[in-house]
Length: 192
Image 1 (spheres, rainbow, N blue to C red):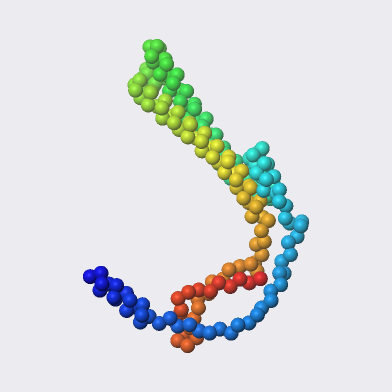
Image 2 (image 1 turned 120 degrees about the vertical axis):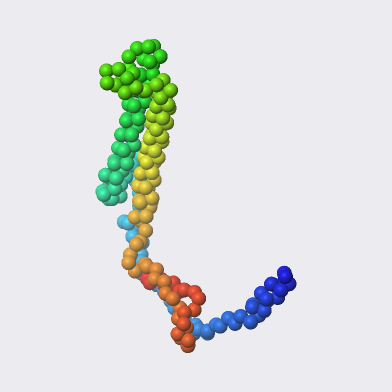
């Protein structure tokens, strides 16, 4: 069985014809028309943007003149702070109620005077859940803070690159002139 497969692969390889077409060789001299300007290149710009973002979130984005990103930064960081505060408040409520319940004093979850009733086990589970959510919101907020610093630095790096419309990649399918069929492959042209 293995010999038959090997034999069939060798036959297919031997019978396969690769067609090639000769091309006329021409020498082309290319001059660099893009001259780097010393005004545009600022090697310390990414470090400044990262430093500014570390000092005050959103300041690095303002340094890069990407003002539309500042509300996104403050919205993300504000959401993290909001969820931290909410979970911390609920954690403290459950903790206080549990401490009062252990001392056999009335609390807000004792079921008296129209309050909802939560057992001691439910208060313990609520404390664990709110503490976990509180700690997670701290980590997410710290991650978003670091992410906005990295974003400002990367954006400052990318602003120094030439993104002229003449520097584009345009893929083209290669067509066989004789049979007018597509050949497997593609050509990539760089227009300068």
